[in-house]
Amino acid sequence: MVNQFTNTARRAMGAAIVAGLCALGMTTSVEAQQRAIGTIWIDPDGCEHWVRDDGWEGYGSNRLTRKGTPVCHKVETCGVMNTDVLFATDSAKIRREGQAYLNQFFGQTAARAYTIIGHTDSRASDEYNLRLSYNRATAVARYAAQMGKPINDVRGLGERQPRASNQTAAGMQANRRVEIICIR
Image 1 (spheres, one colour):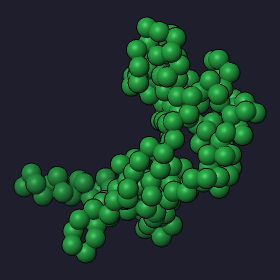
Image 2 (cartoon, helix red, strand yellow):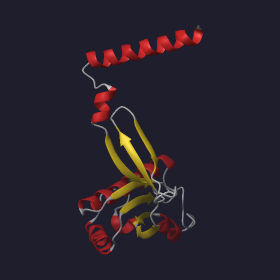
Image 3 (cartoon, rainbow, N blue to C red):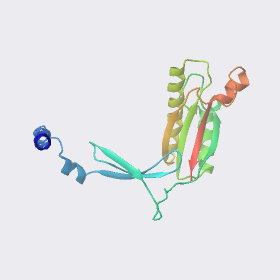
Image 4 (cartoon, one colour):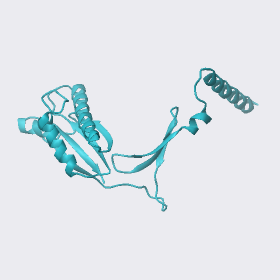
């Protein structure tokens, strides 16, 4: 009796929600399914996923070959750019010299997609460095997108993955970088 009441209550609640959404002029799930957007999303590790989003709810699943193995592309770091060349201190606006550098890099590099990752040294707070590194990576991604390059992902890692010690000026300079990962 309890299970039957619970199921009846669930159906009534579902019907009430759909009726309420319709009364507000919102889309019902059947209409949403008719205009759902499907695409393939590539992870930063190069593996593909089928993704579908109807605006209310989305889902994704691994894209598999007929043998059941994941479809993945070769991933490699194809560019590491010192941010001193691309940006002024505490800025996420690409300098003219940086634009020339990016033009040359993206003009000579071909990939299915790119992942852009920003890094900083440890001179400021963690929160500030995360925001600055993300803003710089986003600036590079926008510039690449303007050149018609497909951007897969943008990340800002701040000071969390140093290449060298932040105890020296040379080490801090090595840590201020934008890495570009090519998905081939």
